[in-house]
Length: 112
Ligand SMILES: [Zn+2]
Ligand SMILES: [Zn+2]
Image (cartoon, rainbow, N blue to C red; front, top):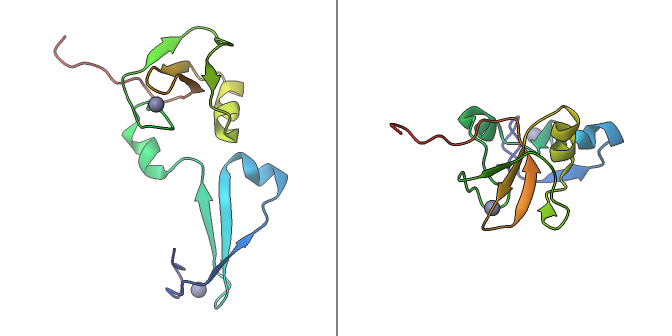
């Protein structure tokens, strides 16, 4: 990982504040110019694809659940809880046996 200010690669990990943990995975500070680099839970590329996919394996063939199944696993990253709180639909990845909340649309078959 490189600093976007000076291309230096000695970035030091910074502590996040509690409220920053909701959307930041990590913060790094450049040892040379002091520039901060933030790593988000969701990559912007993830959001722009706008297709719900499994956070663990990237599978887009998801099953939609209307309610949480307590036998199956639930993805517990802060942004998943956050989306649940905001009313995002619940999806299930069959290969991972993982449930998660995602605002993005499910993958649709074309021409069906
Ligand atoms: Zn720098
Ligand atoms: Zn998966």
